[in-house]
Image 1 (cartoon, one colour):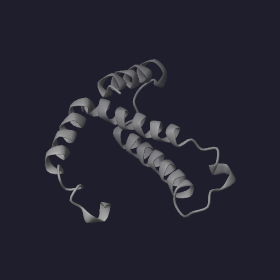
Image 2: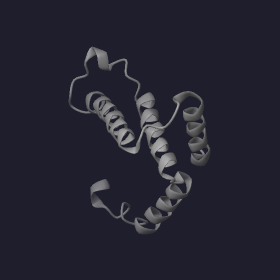
Image 3: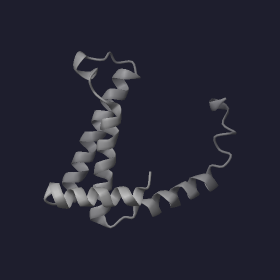
Image 4: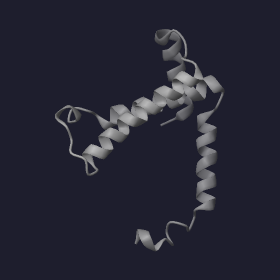
Length: 108
């Protein structure tokens, strides 16, 4: 996935169909709501809670895509280049954690 292109796709969608971006605080609330929907599916499908009949129809991929969409909206409206930010984060994590997980006895 090319994140830079995805940001452009989201921006074009907002301009052509969404009228305008919600303000940053509204989008933060939207992000929290979408993450909550992901958490509900995970806790009921993979965790110890029982899954309700209405939960069975929920698509985890769709909910994760909702999270990604809102994250890209927030990045666009705040001027964050997510491709650059993600690449920098992966470089940092790789350098910092190169042996951390391999040497973790809890993961053996």
